[in-house]
Image (tube, rainbow, N blue to C red; front, top):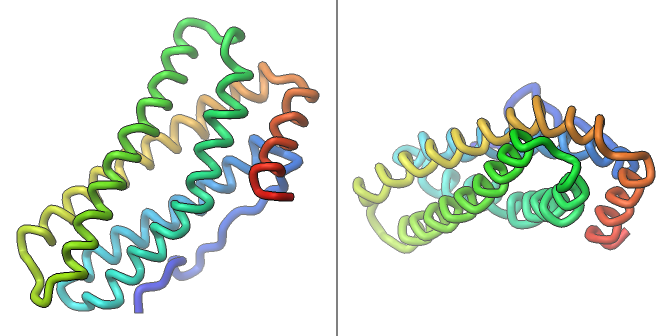
Length: 179
């Protein structure tokens, strides 16, 4: 069976009252889903049904928590940072936004391939190969993106945002989740 969580892993937890820490904890959960995608793609030839279900489960997480995470950044965090950043930091923010767009494009392409694989009676080697390639690109992009956010964006956010701004971000995050 292809598990959503790797053996021995737990998702880091942080409350919405600490928005920067909450975003970092969400990164750990996203990384777990990336591992699932990679393991499932590797198991597609031998455990097709389970692999496709594991991929769908990872997509379900990205459709819910992943979408909220991106909105938290793009609708709450990034706008509050704009105007306070150096030119280099503004470039970093633009790069992160570009990553979000590319990740969305790769995600859409992956989903199309998964749907094609699920609807075909026999494994299609070209689709399987394409799934492997796209999964590798998608996971590499996300891991690089997360590393930049963890190492650079979090520090900038902590340094530049006031307690009132962080509280406003937290309130928006709670509202987005219906809390």
